[in-house]
Length: 133
Image (cartoon, rainbow, N blue to C red; front, side, top):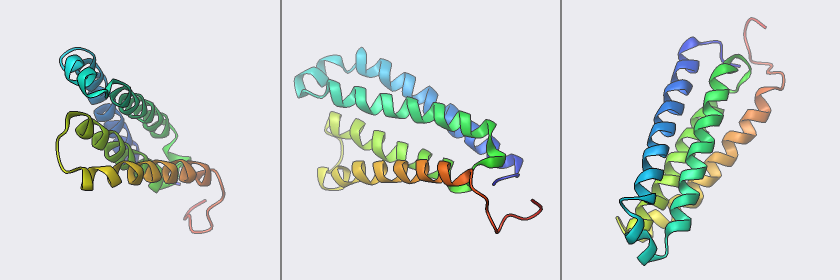
């Protein structure tokens, strides 16, 4: 659905950002923040955020390699959803920011990721608006 090479490049860069920061945040959570997360009872939450972030980084990399058959919204929703979902969990785990804002951000990010996966499925269907195919 996207034949624009810049779409594949954007997906690749988003995957690289989420992957690199996911590895770094996983390591920070396991080492530098270990005591803080343990005291707050948040180690499992941090791990969940890291797993979701890394999983979606991998998914974005796969979408980049198939960008011609992917709906343009799929990767954008997956990336934004991952940042919102995992980012809000990281901040909640450390007690950074207002819970009234961050609390709802987590499920909104999850809904965006679900939407992104729906568009992954839609991408394989024929698109009557697609030009030149």
